Image (cartoon, rainbow, N blue to C red; front, side):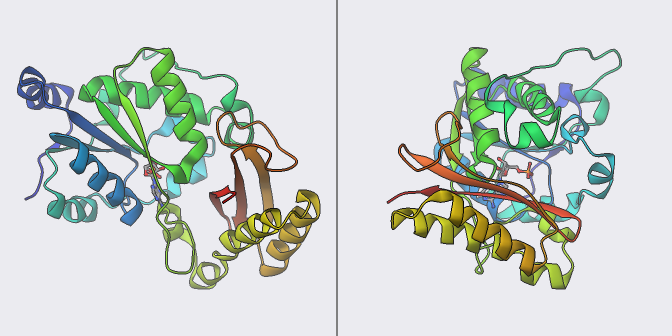
Length: 282
Ligand code: AMP
């Protein structure tokens, strides 16, 4: 069944009021649209867990540090609504810009510490935009549960920190990264890759698995890292923003996986920035 597409806050509140009064569990799946199977796995998790599910589609200008990236970001609302039909979600929240950021809007939610590194370092202001919009999405939808992908692992940790710090009554669920058959993490930005770049893109996940294998065999991180960067360069990647081994709870940098750890990468291919992360260990 097609879900109603709600664009104004009063319509959203009218929809959620009876659900709240009935004590129902409301799950929210925040997205920026251009939906793929990664997003849909979050919708499935929400449907399994909650009485009501709201999928949000909002290309949030405040989390883009690069105007070109915002301009080029894929927008496919009609197809997105069609892809969601089979899930019988209860509402699509596709707020008009003024519903999110009315005139004189002057509040920012800012999480420190976790945001100093990786995406926070390379995309200044990005996580302030994320934390602010996610806080608003939580309160707008009256969500009891929210579903985020491990694909954006740092974002997942930032949202968890923010919800805990602000006493938001929302359980934040992390869902595994969904990949293409060749290992490439699904991402809306993959639509921007040329055919040629698309065949090269899985090398990123490949080199990460190679490093993880090496670490499992007891090899040192630095030479594994150097070999991976060289292979990315040879494959046609034009830059590596980071390829880091970090603790999975607080993102502190590690020289070896002495605690539960993940490998995190961001790299440029044909003008598109790809990010990925995998767990390291058993
Ligand atoms: P986005 O539309 O890219 O902002 O992503 C919306 C949500 O979908 C975020 O919680 C992402 O982490 C999640 N997501 C994006 N790609 C994937 C993927 N390949 N697997 C699982 N979740 C994903």
